[in-house]
Amino acid sequence: MNTLRKLLWPTYTRTKLYDKATDNIPYDQLIKQNAAIVVKGLKRGTYLDLGCGTGNQAIQLALNAGPDARVIGIDKSPEALEIAQKKYERMKREYVLANISFIEGDIAQPLPFSDSQFEGITANNSIYLVDPFSPIIEALRVMKSGSLFLMSNPRDRETSSSLAIVVDHISQKKEEFNNHYGKVLGDIALSGHILNRGPDYFLILPFEFALRYNLFNVDSRFWPVERWINEIEKARKLSPYQFTMRPPFESYSNQNHTIVIEKS
Image 1: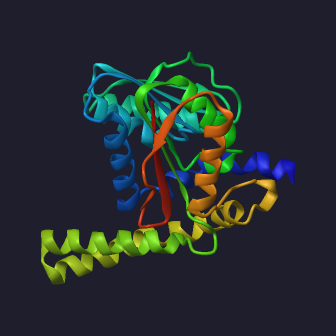
Image 2: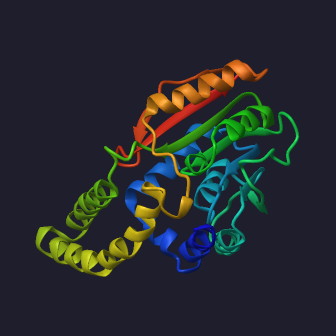
């Protein structure tokens, strides 16, 4: 089981299935929303993306924050970080964005950063894969007073559905094609899009089941939002850091809980 677990993430990233799973309109909307909330239009400072994977959220932070800012993405998968770096190099040739450093590290362990170092922190679909207590405490330690820590995690496995994300993507894609080409040609374009992208969804399913049902001891946490709030309140009681928590809201086609914490 441990061998299979170790092979899961390298396989998921090397085969580009992770990026295929997130190549959809709702995910693009999610990472843009996350970046806009955390950066707050400052256009300066240093931002951190916890569990950055192949770099999508970190790059969006860099686009949002602008060239005078800095972004650090941390992840324990060297395969994912290699892809993230290549994405960043491509983006630099086309867009003006903040400098990004991708470093290898485990977000379940103490973070290799100074106290009060960051203007904002994101953790997009990453904390649910570790015991959340340590990364929440560490995020509070390394963020500046007045800054925001945003984490977005999947809803509980009984009510969440990746199919809802696919349906939402197709619905928005249909509107996009129809507006651009008209209804008849738009529907033809949509059919081609579905035929082209449909197989990707079925290729992703084995990895989704491994995450959703903790196959191979993946140790994922598809929790209801109340459970996440309890974890945050535990951090409040057991840490020296003062903070306020905004009301949680649903995101990513209503399949994620997003929680924003502001450090006092």
